[in-house]
Length: 266
Image (cartoon, rainbow, N blue to C red):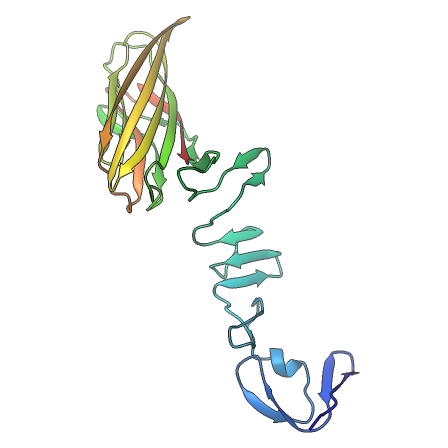
């Protein structure tokens, strides 16, 4: 039997579909027998903010907690129902190409060792951090997310810089990669110091890494000392890893870390 279905507007908002009696599966899964259908029958049970999609069963569905449109603020939440920016994603993002954001280029995370990927900014800490009194104090830190080192040859580039006061107090600046002390250096006393280090850390196997650094101390106009070293670390790949600078001194702000930049490589 062939039945003709006609579409027509009823009033200003209702869509009527007729004629005859037939079964219809609604968006909420109900199967009803109707001789006319109004559009509000399909949407009345949906949740505010839901973005509709066709489910595997071929019917319209929603997943409000994981796909949410904030119509008031024009924001889309993926993996959450409370977006705070125009596109708010909870969870990892994998790109198969590059993403241009403002004036800098972001490469993909998760590429193979043969991929030609630009560094990806993990985080930057630009809040000055100085030592407090005697002893060793954390100056600045950045936390790498768990599983950042998901494959061999993945790594980070760490750049940090700061100053030291011109007094006779002993001053030592250190860098830690997780629980691993990468370097410890005693700064020159009685002169104002500017210091900077650049560190590379790469995964070589499960829970094993290799590192190398260059440390520069500028302690007089036109004069500087340069130090290099390399070694191995054994931090857990699947855990979050805290990268931090510390200062050991005597008086407040004998050592100040003014910047800590961490970039993912490859």
